[in-house]
Length: 531
Image 1 (tube, rainbow, N blue to C red):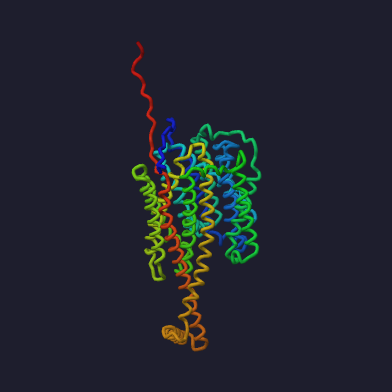
Image 2 (cartoon, one colour):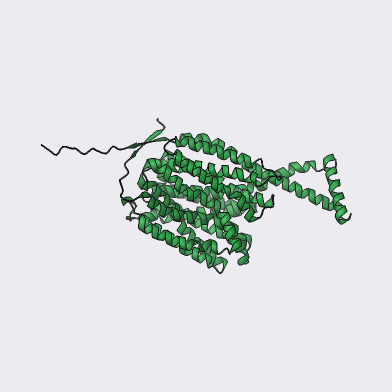
């Protein structure tokens, strides 16, 4: 069987400029993706404002993610019910008004309620915007279009923590939500003016409502998010409630899949996985989403906990990743349709693995430059991987499948990111304990190096604060160094594991069908006028 697909360009000649539609959805998507990460750094300030605990404040993130996750794969069904443009307008309006409510919240309950509405509104914007971008451009131009789309998808979550920290420190956490209001209303005007629904995306008849599919989807996503948020604190499957909850997730997920495959009008059409490119692309999107959100979560912790960076300084150290992403987007735009995109993606995966190896060689004596360089490489590699992936995964699908497919595709990234973030937290905790167990074997009084170090510390402490308790204080200092070194080794192990995963998955890229674009020749007008 040939591993090559020929895509015929039967794209209709449109009078409107497709870049106008692209600009309309790009502003909206940048606002939504930015908001998914900008609130993270403000959680301590939010908790302090409402006298809430850290666990209670995490519901500000969890409520948004759950609501977002339920709507993302349901986008195609709601688009059929209302018409895609109408649903996009409603979603943008909900997100904008909910942002205003978040900024004006006077209690944690009000803020969480507003975040749920914001998540419902924001859930559909990503898949609809991606579907519009894929449809407005002919297949041979989608590589360039996805490079532009990638600006919002990749660049926004990178600058989000830095921007959120600056706004929170300079003004107030309320403004991280209120800045969405003017942007949202501008987006509404642009969508109304420049977005036009194709015939298959207009309002249609929905003969039946898939209530059970929607309920099952909500249950397994909601319970999964609770497990991921609280599992580490409760020793995961060592806790009975985690075991029962995991069973509930497995049962409801399986029931959801079976129902969506057998009913006539499912809320999520899973038959799109029959397309080979889409199935492979969705799996890789899941893995890359896990790596992206994990590294974004682990690096600030490393800089603040071990290097002593402030939140603002750690944000500045990570922000050059955005410049790398922009460079990667330019590279993708230049190479689109000139080089086999599978090779571009494979190169990006290996470069991304290399950046994780660089992170895995850091130590506690590094300068900020040692953080900036791997971040730039990492940002460029993410773009070089993600843009071809978003192009190849959808190129063999029909236009009327786009809205449903983009919903499922983006859900995979969201779930992957949630699982990856929780997994890396567990990995750091468990691996640091393992390293501490191995390192502590050297801290015995029979080890000459340890006794010499302990004696020097004890003498120094005694000189500064007297002999009383100097031995105890010296042991405390040594133990703190032990914990610091074991935690550092755990962070480094995580980066090396990610590098190995990316290298192992790289050959899978060549399972994609190679795509060739073949334009249909327009019939020539006869110059004869008749006999």
